[in-house]
Amino acid sequence: MSTVATRWRQFKFSLTSKFVYANNEGQEISDPTVKYGIDPATWAEFAKSRQTPNWQVCQISLYF
Image 1 (spheres, one colour):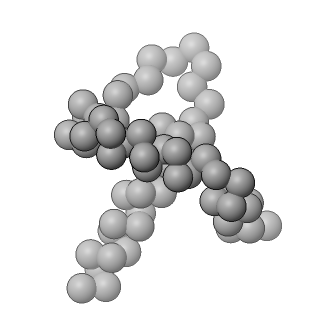
Image 2 (cartoon, rainbow, N blue to C red):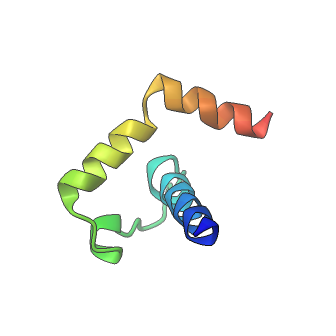
C-alpha cells in the first residue's frame, strides 16, 4: 500500500510542477483535464489549493 501512496504523491507533484507552476512561455500547454480525464471542477480546486500562500511555503521549504 505504501507504493500506491508514494506514486499518488509523485503524480500530484508532477501535475503541480507541469501545469500549475510551469514556465511554458512559447510552448503549447496540454490541458490536464483532457490528458488525464480530470473533471474541470476538480482540476480548478486542485490548482487553487496549490496556489495558496501556505502551500507555496511548503514548496519552498522542500528546495531549501
